[in-house]
Image 1: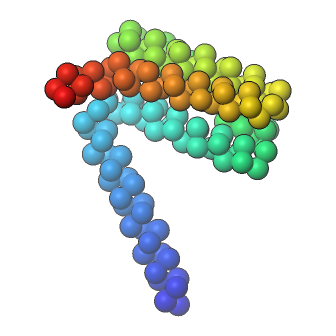
Image 2: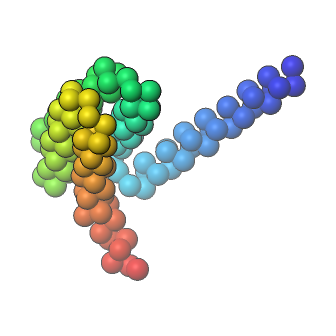
Length: 137
């Protein structure tokens, strides 16, 4: 009984910290729809990585496909700035490369393509989100 209570408390605390941190960061860094897309992208990267750990290429391909569709859609939303749309378009293209690598089943190619996705995400953050903060350093 004590273990169950302790485990439940740990899970609830982790969830509260996780959701609270995400909510605070969202207000500071990006509009809500953009923030949601970034969190979804991170979840997809995590899901693909987890699928690759057990060599579940079918699951990894499914996640990559939905990731690519979402990024492609976001890149067409005219209310977003051109820089943000271009960034999401670059991510979509890198995810397409990842999908192709997953289809081959070559682990090194998949790892390189996954790294390309993360680099394209980081490049946009470096140019857009962190530019003002870097000026202050």
